Image 1 (cartoon, helix red, strand yellow):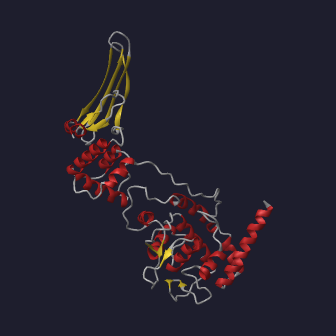
Image 2 (cartoon, helix red, strand yellow):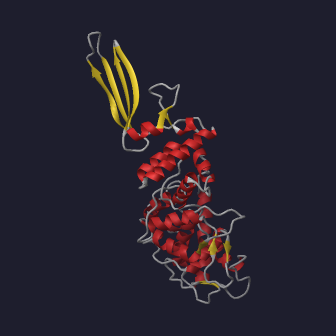
Image 3 (cartoon, one colour):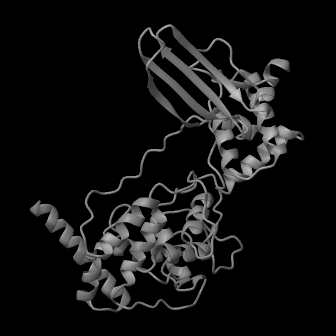
Length: 381
């Protein structure tokens, strides 16, 4: 432990000395910044002042390479001078770096799409009040120090394109930006979003941050129905039109991913839709079932129900169970009943909705408790 503390203290001192020389500020004030809880790496390793300085000199795109600086406060190819206050400048760069760390970097074959100018505003909103202003140049500086892909779209600056997930950035921007419509689903939420929101105020209050954050290993959850439906986009029929609307809703985080047909039905009960759109849902599910890619029938949401005791009819007491589930169209119910009374043991399930009785049927060969539905169109196609 003593050796580790010595190594850490030496790193703090080296960084403080380098930052004080680079910014022309006091060594003690620089050391104080190096030791700030906000600068200890909330989503990764502690940011190194020496690495930040080296980035301005050596980076492939923004580095000066022993020449005149080509990154300034206002951005790339800007002659605006850096402004360091000697009290919070390094801390703010560390926070900007952590904010960028929460996004998934794009793959090496993808082209960056997110503007540094847009990202700088997102950083201001997310990091407020701990970092109320983020310059375009500092956002680019932090991104470059992280090794994120960066390109200059037109060769003129001052804005650059940063290689983070465009969908994740749109999610965060809508979550924290003033006047934004918040996402209705979280499939594009960056994995570090909630953790960083939690530890920021703790670090700002000077409290210890126990346990380093580790980026979770991505888990590829199977979504066979979603994958199939996305493939139908572009078809000139009701299924293709539904798939296009569904895909747009996923892209804009207006609703969650439908991994199964019943999840698609649940989504349509949560968002406003026309009768024609519901009919397209039924047609899509019927076609999906006919593909044979899945044999799982549709089960709808349980609304209410339970069991109660019954004194019976002379042969002993028992229980009666009644459960109500939402019908597929949402205007009626599916009623499941069980009479567990000696001499009167009956089990029944029925669709209590005129529209759904026409459009849906119970799958053969299943118990009453294990009932499942499929569109009538499956058997008539």
